[in-house]
Image (tube, rainbow, N blue to C red; front, top):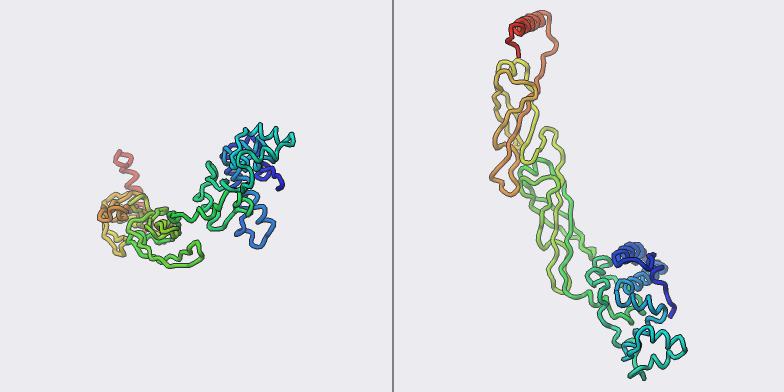
Length: 344
């Protein structure tokens, strides 16, 4: 069989670390996977070649043999499986000197299956679970590779918990306040769609993750299914601003109510309107706190934050001549009062 430079296949130097080899493999495997390149025979062959190179270079023992013996490393493995005791260097010397046949016979070398016993665990290489994460149920191995290292695809069928799945959902601030139920369309790895009803609790925040146990991808070999995580996005509200469990809203208040005091009505997320007392001499931007009128606490919905009403003073417009005279008189008195030290 033709010798392949596995380092060149993965595009890494001979000094590459296991981490670098694994990273290169994952990148190339995703790029050339048959599912990504349906019907592309060239990509399929490249994919098999990448998988073989990784399985050898990621295993410290196989990589050492490969680095020491080059194209003879496969023959040496078969020789050792047949009971041969020569070291890699001795084997290389013997085969180089033309004694490869004799060395290959070794003890019990007559009539042995060169692949027998080679179906052992690939210590240090990609675990079946890792490979399943990348490739799913698709077998990434050529016939030659399976004959040397065993049916790795078959080993992936052991019991394994299903993967977790994420779904995005967008809510209004009212839905986040009250809590709601949403219908989610989830597609299984097999391509089968299913509908899941998810309950969103009151007080959920933008970016919150709601876990639905056992609603993720199905497990294998009788293992449990994974979980579904619902990631919540809360739309901005035109009236209310959220700060943790507190809410803030603006209230337009006329100048006279701010000066003399009075009562205004403000809406809440509950859909009600509350009366709010404006104290005399209320300044623009001053916040009035309404205890317990904010968002419910996510884990303790019986508790709630506060609602802060921020006053925005509205000045009168369209004054007639008489009204302007009255305002001017008021301004003159206020100015005169300020000269005596009474102004604030």
